[in-house]
Length: 413
Image (tube, rainbow, N blue to C red; front, side, top):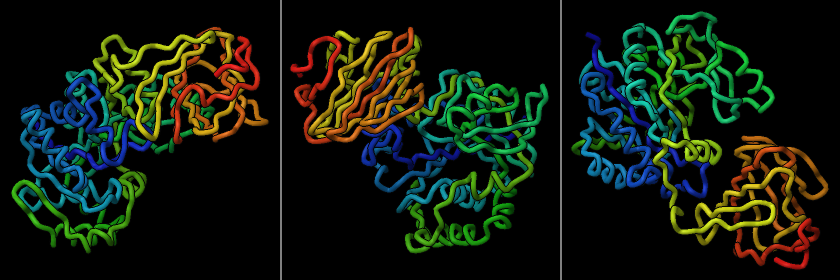
């Protein structure tokens, strides 16, 4: 029987790509996207399997302590420790601190690192993949969890492995988030995977390797732990030492410099829900229980070119889902009080922006400034869907100055 894994749950990010749904005060991992449950809730529940996992260590910001405690009360999950960062320092320090703390009690710990804001729909498959990865973990190596790409995505990093039919593959290299052209070429290969951000390693091996790869970073992180304070289940790193730690990712500091890396394939309905594109794609699935704040609050607004739905609205922003019928187009227009950002989530768009005209596909985005002439067209035979984020001081439909319109509305807002 293999030993259990100690989960490290990373919960300090702010989910910038999902703004304005995700904000610094209320980041996406704590938003009740699935009825009353958040992604953080679901992550804790998924790790609550005593045969495979020990009690998790949560790493988060001091400012999210109340949200973490509310989640623990709501889910009833017991945790080993909550480490409260005084400021963000990226993933390498966030992963190293709990390892150091744990090894002070047990030098034989093996760890499973996972983000708190990712979605997994098939828990049984998730457990099977984790068990397989755990059984094949070399005590002097790193085991990644890779996802078979479903479509060309510019949102994820990629893992290049050796070409074989084995369930565990040797990692050859990492590929940064590509542009759309490179992503299309990458997914044609049968040895390229999305990097899920989940991985397994032996703690003692990790610390010894990190000491040699990043000695100064390790020294500063260790000092912040050594001088930190335990208060019940909470741990507070020493602030002065912590401030000296370099902000560096785990991938840059460790994974890309280490040669002994393996990968297990994870086929468990995974999504990082890191953008409006991935959020919208998941919401469309029949099995999805996802809800947004606007559910039931707004009616669909029909237009001659298609329709739009308001997903959320605040004093500073409004988010719409715009659906344009095949071969239809919105008016050539501009706005005095608002700017807009468009994210294409399906279909092909032709965009007019000032004197420019160009096409956009799923995953592409563009910013339309205040008073900038623009137009959105669907030039394909299937519906075009776009997430529009408006920012400014006023979001009424009468802030539309139409310069040209196919449907005779040039003088009507």
